[in-house]
Image (cartoon, rainbow, N blue to C red):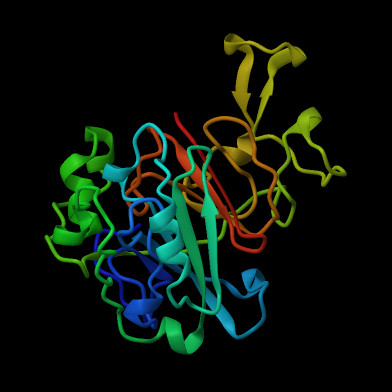
Length: 275
């Protein structure tokens, strides 16, 4: 995440802000609250990660607003039914987390990625939850207002209070990652055939313990926000395809309890864990 707004001609997408190329009525609503889900990021996929065909070049990720994510999702069948009755984008995938909160991803064509920013739709008339802060000041400003000091350090200056305020994404290749192209697995806990995936750490002498914990040299310079390769979740490794993005709370502005998340955009799986 860079310290400037995105330039689609040279960057690889953007964090916060608005999604591109869709109609407002295609913006996914939260099935829990009836408000629009918050846009977290839109990522232009490298050629090797375009697993849904050459015409699908990007993915937009939407999340439950952090001020709506606390303690477990209430269930209102009327809101769920009303959201289900609305028109949707042809390549919308919906996901839920362990607390039953809502997330979504849209697979975008080149024309959509290059299209105009979409404006969020109105919430359902059934919505009774408090209005999420991002709808008034934008996701970047809302996160910066509430972020812990370590997360505020990700910003060179306070973001503008604007729905379109975003930060550019720049992709750089990892110099050395033995897990590139391999499905992440959690060792003996894995339920599928071994992929050759290696943990980023080891224990001196093979004896587990805090004093024996070490990072492999090849993992020391790996960025926290990345596509594929070695995963560093805050808790156990979720089983996903090699085609995933791992990201921190500030990479779009979420409430992961100080943790991080993984989105498998091939299988459309999502997981997060607190720190």
